[in-house]
Length: 193
Image (cartoon, rainbow, N blue to C red; front, side):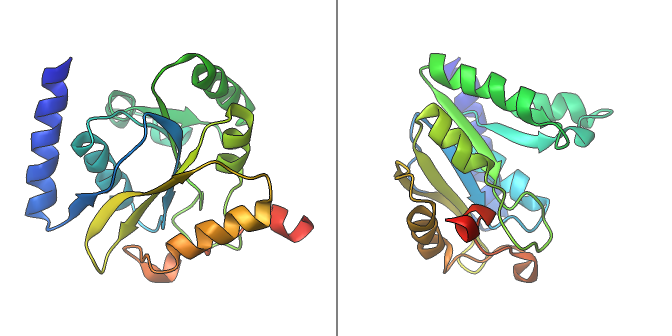
């Protein structure tokens, strides 16, 4: 089992170096990984290389429509989990059950939910972290510094606005590949809090 991780890590370092990106930070063994800003399909490639460099497998939620043809087996082999965005409940329930029983569990979500600019982030990461009791780790892509990495890991307080203020502070200086497509870190639930 260690050999594939060594090969992947070596490959990730080679590829990241070739495109002049650098992986930084430490990832926990368990947690909900929030990835932002999500503005390009290259985010997935950089996230995969970050996971390989960190010698981990991330269960990355990906819309089920992408699991067709030859892309389906490739996505599954990299840890991707198909998500039916019209009915995400079944997938989420299975993942929550896995999170309660597995020693190492890392679930990655692009909180923006789209590569296009929107009004709000999707709150799935917040609900999953609350349901499982897992900490949240803020992962990021920053084009100006050419870094892809792991930011802080913390337990949610349950105060949505305070937790999101902390998240906004972290992402304030992070810029995606297409900055004009960035959705600011804000949940609809904050408007009701």
